[in-house]
Length: 197
Length: 197
DNA sequence: GAATAAAATTGACCGCGGTCATTTTTTTGT
DNA sequence: ACAAAAAAATGACCGCGGTCAATTTTATTC
Image (cartoon, rainbow over all chains, first blue to last red; front, side, top):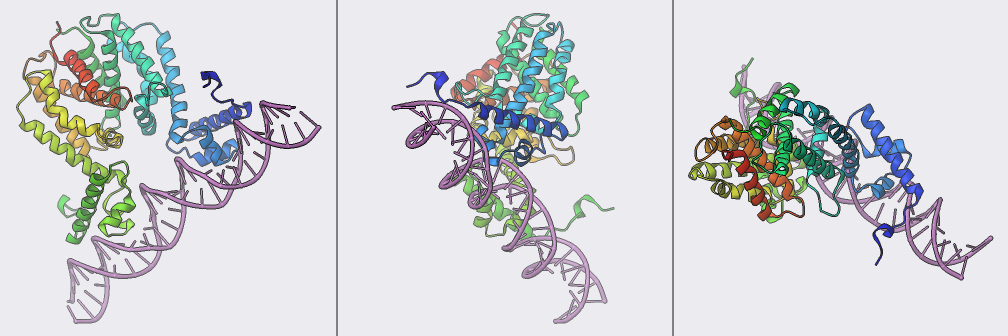
């Protein structure tokens, strides 16, 4: 029928509008929070009609996915550029910004888990993409350093991700704070990554 | 001020209404699905006004939490009564009904993760309660059988839970089916529970 | 058993996400 | 340069979760 790149012509006006919506949303989130973000406020700040929003984003979640995915990409890049951790404490130190963001708001974490698995192979979302990138990075970390060598690094990477999510999820339990999170995560990763004694 | 049991008198009419709401909701879910459940349909089937619903349940999620929590309790009981698994294949076989339910609908899984961490220690919800019970059960499983002895069983139990959630989450990725889930979970649990070779 | 207080129920109403037929703007063909 | 087609934007409208002042039912007191 048609090639991939010519499926639908897009006018520059449209991408400008999309940028306005994203910028307005980011500003509102910075002023207040993800939780209190309203589509009506976004379109108001962007100076467009409500219907326009949904011509650019399938739903409100799709907007949040873009914004949160971009943030995750930033953390991933920083982690990828910092030196490979030589022990578990260093590993957790590298993750600290990511953890801080993930625990900053319940809404953020909810959106993240909701989109962590890809919807489909062809149409993989930005958050799922960053989760994949994270696992690849963790796999590289696990493959070097003083960690166990009896298991496929890819599998170890997936495990690190699973434990990170588990530790974060328990944070939203009123009892456990950020301090407890790192201690807990250290316990998981020690048992998961270190050779058995 | 007052004892725990006398904080507020409850009439039997009220608990009857609550039962009607729960029964109506369960029937509607059985006929259709969790996803399509509407509060208006529930109150219609129960023969009460909309406001009554929210006098009995904080929000729609609270109703789902009750129903899903009860289902989880059933699975937990069955698992607790069946013999302790002697290897990972048996362990996964024990989990099969729980897995089937958790993957039956996206909505079910979403509600589960959303409530898996307790909201507060005093006011622990039914789903969080069942997660705790599950982890306790997994800990007992991990403590016996051919599994690693170098790590606190409680920690191993938490890990089993984390891997189960991770495996289920990846199921909702279009590519991976139920078959792939069990294979994936077996890989996680082998690396997590077995002594390193 | 009438009066009073408390508990339970009611339904009109609101907030907000999402839809869609219609209108406005841009591109394309000749 | 004009007309026809495609793309983008519009805003009235809907669905559904959730609220609350008002009403009805039940328990209590004399």
